[in-house]
Length: 116
Image (cartoon, rainbow, N blue to C red; front, side, top):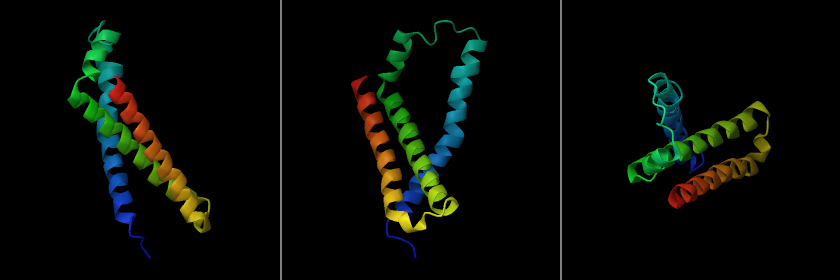
């Protein structure tokens, strides 16, 4: 039987998976390969990155990427523990631990992005 909160967690799982599959590889290619390949020597200097991160649009995008990735991890890890390791009888503590960690990570990401 489905629990009343299942659709909410599945929504966050799907959104996190989509963001992780589309945005994360693009960020890795741009920051790890493209910028060094074109010789952007000062592209990742602290003052330039700080200007980029202080932009409100960048903060929202980073927050979405980080928080949705946390919830994607939490949902996948929860079901791995429950079904893969046969912890179905400990459903509530596993769910609280996984989603609690995702919520804590989201709050931490928000605090860091707001302090910058």
